[in-house]
Image (cartoon, rainbow, N blue to C red; front, side, top):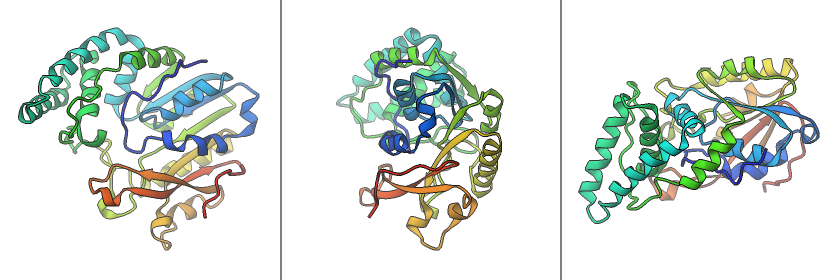
Length: 306
């Protein structure tokens, strides 16, 4: 399974491109020499998906899922009709660029596109194009919705962003021909997993502080109870002899008294790796910090954190 250099087609808060080397180190060695099923229940931008498919030709099946129907619709459109998507994106990009020297006009156009997206009344290709357009033009590429599922991120400062990357969309489309795309509860992915399977979990991260919460990725929040339910699901996978790898925020790195993840995953392998946070509006609050990689199997971590 070669992906022809397919890469994430979205900017994504918490995208995992920067953790690929650590995840590479954390993968079970047994899977390098046997066929396996790869399952990603919170697919997001798909950085790990594309990397896995490029580097592990022994992946027999790949299954991705997300509760965000706007996101999975975009994956499906890229898989099924990339040419039509590209045509719509090219129109959006051409018009957006006409506002290069007109900040107010650019903002008005952005708000019109955002309102159209939130109506969710266009065909699936246009809806996918609007999703990518907003991702490329909004503040820091965030995806955030309110309780009514309305996308509410303001316009970013990009004057001529790449809205239509036709070459990458075609490369991603080719990769996705071998991927099953699901929409809904992550627990449903177990029905599709054939042994041996590797699950990679990248759920909404537990906030490091009350002001850093970014759980509005879907209209329903992902709080502590949901984190515990996910741990329980991981236990089920463990009992069925599936491999799993999970990433999350290192709340203990921020507050040594906060042992939430150390407690709920105490029977598993918890490792801390360096990462960067780049989405804070305050540049001074961006920077290096540790994140967690938790597995139900042992591995030797190459990175040493002093």
